[in-house]
Image (cartoon, rainbow, N blue to C red; front, side, top):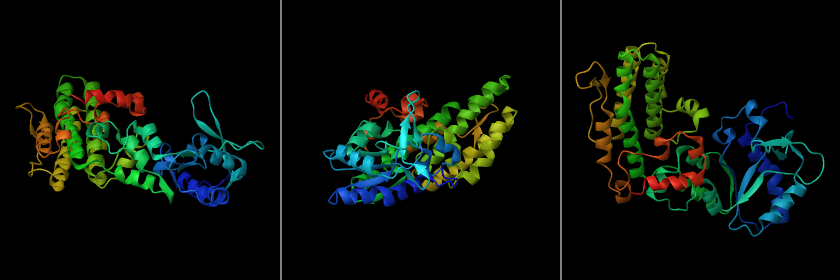
Length: 359
């Protein structure tokens, strides 16, 4: 194994340029294709390190073809002709039957069990979204941020066909009214619980108050991703990528203070400061009439709120697309209502869940 760590995206790019492309040029000189590394894996997000190399990581990529008529033959040509090692890393992989993950395999003979996988764009869409382009409003809100980030992250190494770059451009951002719908739903979530943190704390439920505060912190963070037009990653990298957002410098001190607070009053003080930052950012988006950026008392109780439900209503009023207006108004996207891995990671589950949004 190489003693010098190479980020996986760069490793795969060089693997394509220096090892895969020469084989394709020699055996299939007229082949029209795209080559990229997208999908799952920390390297696709540019966040891999030495720890990442223990499974699922290595010199690998996807080839996108107009059809799969030659896919088997291309796969075999690569298995026969790829070098067994590239920049010090094995090019073969072995699958762990226990958990389905792939690990580098330095086998000395036989066909190389490489991970240069061959696809069509339609196949990628089916595998990842159980859908086809153009996505409907329901398909957009059930795609899930982590899936959309996986498909639009990584890098394209060759675009001879152009299907993959077109797909990535199509999925690069939510359509405007879908974006408004999701923004509104995230504000709605804040409005539904922002007064509960203090109420639980005032009754002596320190643990319950802290749990609600944590939920509100996550809602604020998800809202920040939406406001900046960024797809949120899955939990492992959620905080890491959040810290790279433009608004992070304004929000992180208060959000970290909320999580470290030992009293509900301290939590509330920092949550309110974060709410006020978010309403200021909302006003800068100019998607509604300017709103008050100051928190106020909840029905005269000693709990300060930003009235997230009212903010949500002003955003929903700006939606004009009939297909988006037909969605359940306060529900939001699939990752607004669920954080279950078994929901967010499986397109067939998300496809069945679409019935919730079709009313």
